[in-house]
Length: 614
Image (cartoon, rainbow, N blue to C red; front, side, top):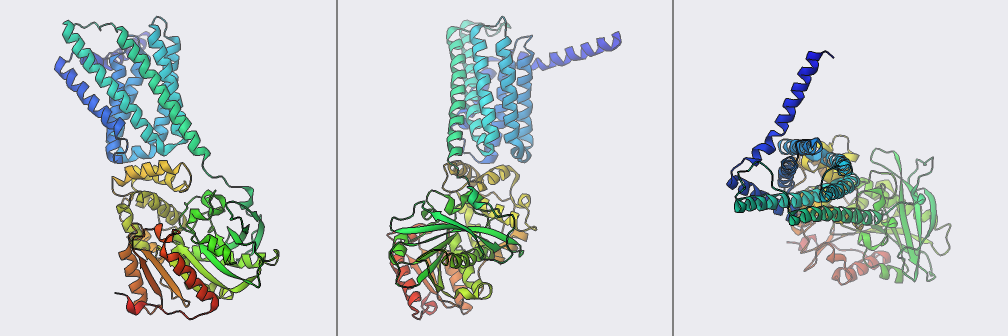
């Protein structure tokens, strides 16, 4: 490099450095009242961010962007002439905050990774600065080192938990913004009291200020360690799949083939015995698939072939690990009613997980034909197991029960059985609080506390199943990371608390959808999954009158439409019962369901009540 070029480069670097230090110099010369105003605003912003991390995502993004900028300003104000490390950190946070404020939607998509990398880099730089800070006070070096450890730990947490990152960082930067604001106010008032506000030389830190700096660093580290510990506990509580669910290398194309079985003991009543099975089914595109199920019956010897109830469970999650047979409470997780009565009556209950739960996805969540084939093929496979197990002989007829998601599956099972599995001889279908109208259900989700969690399952399932439904076309950019993470958690795992927290924040924006999901390709697919096939068997539909998820008025309209089409059915509503309460042990539905089922087993004729409905 020539001498003139070197000189030019040096002058340019010097100019950039002077400009980079212009902001703190300007702040140092600002009027005392402006410093107080800035401090008060920072206190307000810090309290808001730290105490209300569940603000709407849009508001939270704004708060975070402003806090990033203030964090950078705090670093710049405290830098020395030779402190290039703090200058880099300060301007880095300012630029990051500005980007966040300008590019809100895009920022949220990359925010977790961005924050994680920023915190790790910040931790490394602060750590090196603290270790090599020769000539600096011991308390300053100690605080820098502790802050570095906190940043590194939080950076790792951010990488491991993308959707919880925003909440943790909100609290962290809220506290930092609060401390900065209080510091501005304290310094300004102190300098006014001492008559030193016009002095350009910075006042030396007193003992209290040094103590507060180290204490703040220790608190930041404690927060980081607590966040990491909580994250580890939540992740340890997530269910893991065993090798039993692995599909064989070659899957037969014929549906309902029993692939393997094993004894099953998880939460099985003392007077019952059970088996877990793996069997074949088919997807909507006719390709072979694998599903799992549990078969349970009484240990009491039977006097003849046992009656069969095929159970379609309610929502447990969307991810493969959320299969009821893989959970600590495999029967109550899917809201199965009257299990003890089933066992006492000596019936056989066949409980499918649905394809994609336990086995390779996607799960046909609220996708009727896929759910129905899983139910019907589970009974086919169970009939194959009765040749291998003593005292498991079953009658040819089958009665179908289902609740919520499983209620929709039961309705589709009844409509599909005659053509898909006529040999099973369905004799009755009982759908309890069924998700009968997919359009009505999705429209109601913004009105439901935590509705975004269920919306995440619907969005993931429809985007994964239907090529014409694009996830990004329907999910607002600010919520995409959260929706993907929520859809990967089971309702029964401890980590669902994170999903519920995120859902509360998202629900303040009213919806995760960027456009109406009941329109376009997704709307068409939702309508396709409303069960309108005629059911040529006795049909019993139960509904809780205080249900906020499957709204009674939507169920009423569905039933009225089916009655108008000539469908014979019995429709009963239960006062004071909500979505889960309608199948609780104290619900009057239980006795009626058992009596109705016993009549189907006995072959008694069924009479509907369409003509008696309002």
